[in-house]
Image (cartoon, rainbow, N blue to C red; front, side, top):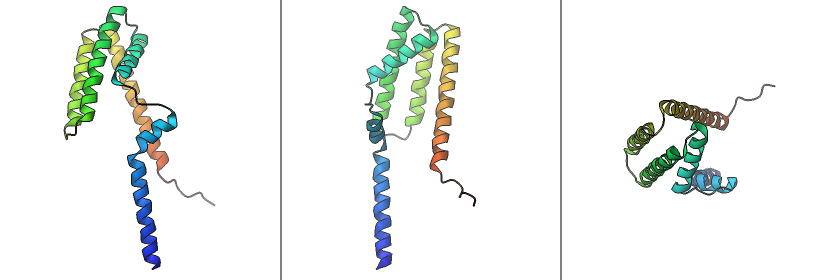
Length: 143
């Protein structure tokens, strides 16, 4: 009987953690007090950041905003789809975004854009690794 109780407890704990894992994104958003930004808001924020970091003029800002809106909408459509090649298709969308920006930005601005993108990707990777390491159980303290 004790084995059945232990098994039932383990099963309930396993089901509970599965449910938590499925709902982690909304819970995290609520915890942070943030709501999911709309595609228009994300495109606007991207454009504002690029305007500051790349020192865009007004004409470039207008063109970059249109490019960013199209980019975010394309990624949003991909996110809604269920397909096996979603990652490959997202890479195509990202490449199209970069190609469109290359036509608007000066060579110096485009190089700076690529540099900042690489820095953000590296920061994202290191944060992801840090979270993975902190989730792992550490060694037992020595006594």
